[in-house]
Length: 138
Image 1 (cartoon, one colour):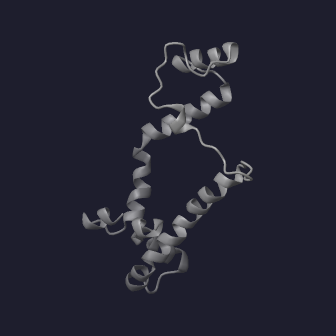
Image 2 (cartoon, helix red, strand yellow):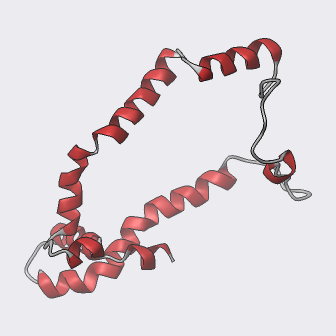
Image 3 (cartoon, rainbow, N blue to C red):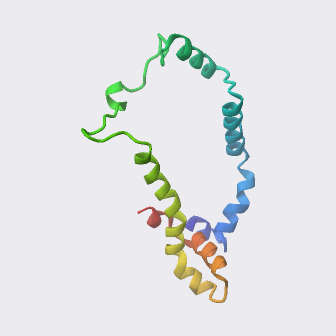
């Protein structure tokens, strides 16, 4: 968002929110994914692959050339560690939930300086817009 500030936008967070309406391609792509999931209708190469996997049990076609070997993509658990979904979900949720908190933290001084009389919600939203994404990720 600091790139928007460098371009002269006063409130980069509001600008980003207003620009969401112009992101019609990603929104349509997500809508198509939901339609395919709920209708359970595949088409094109995916339909052929699904049919082959169900009928023949083959994940790859006979003439497929994998781009990387199975040795690179196969992951084995350490001895004594049970594979559980929470080992993946907890770190992802932690990152997703902490991003706005850390963005607000890194932009809070700017919010206090530029909006001393504003309410807490306005300050938090402004701080998120002024926060440093690269610092928040670290």
